[in-house]
Length: 384
Image 1 (cartoon, one colour):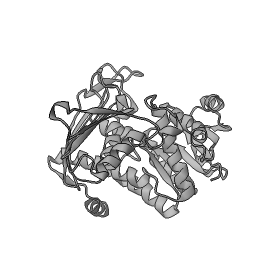
Image 2 (cartoon, helix red, strand yellow; image 1 turned 180 degrees about the vertical axis):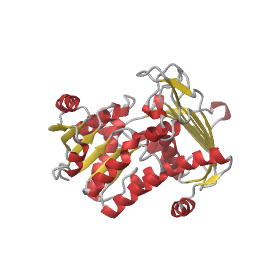
Image 3 (cartoon, helix red, strand yellow; image 1 turned 90 degrees about the vertical axis):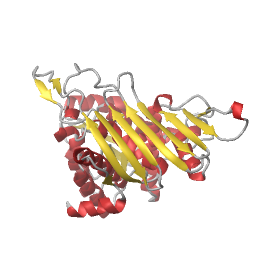
Image 4 (cartoon, one colour; image 1 turned 45 degrees about the vertical axis):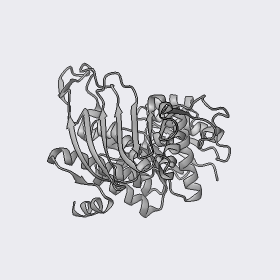
């Protein structure tokens, strides 16, 4: 594996998280060649230069196209607002670069399909920023489900709830515009939950959605005017999975008190599994068997026996953090580029999530179930 050169576009919260992961991955995983932080891009050239120095990049620029066209760069890393993903990803793919893009992949299924297909035709490797599935305990939960540890799966209950827009006085921002954010809570939070549910239980078969905007207007802090919120604050979804079980999902950006409320419970014939991202180093397991008066959930603490944990820490119970999941995600990308193996989640996964998100919106508009099987979505794409 050679040292791949990265061009990172975007210097916000996620740009910083990606920079931390790129700097750390070669230290954490000693079989990974540390990537070279070649160029950092921000629309503000002075800010780009300042952060490039602080984050360890060789160069800085305010021209994202120059990164795509730079023959020295191997991977273009996109951490910009949602509406910029498609143009930047397509330009990078056209230049023959591997592409790492934050979720959601695009504003619509049509745009996501165009990105996915372009990458497949070009033969470049891709990754979408679904870092939560990189948690070693999520890998453990997936393995337990696959092995039958909790028996036949009966149902799934998932939620991703935060409160960053619970206060009606929070000012208007780009995420509330369809033209820049796409969907609301669905795009920002729900995409993670959709990806998580399919990672654990396999493909969804159908969805029935309901969307609610709690605060229809917010004040623009620059002009003082009230502006219309163009997408949903809350999404509630009924789900059927290919494997035969049913489920529910609730996604909210106005859930007062929730900070990173990505949670799920999976119920089976022989037990159940529960997870809460706010306690991301704990997995709760209930198993049938044993004395009736001793039954109850027990807590599994993350430790070196779980995939990838030992690379960070040799002792159990000390815990990983959110940036550590990004390190694992970057490792997966670098390994995939080197080996040619499937990268989970690549742009095909990112596209699938976008198609399901769009189907939930369509379902809410039409008040009916939408078939999200792969055959149905392929047929729908051909007819659009």
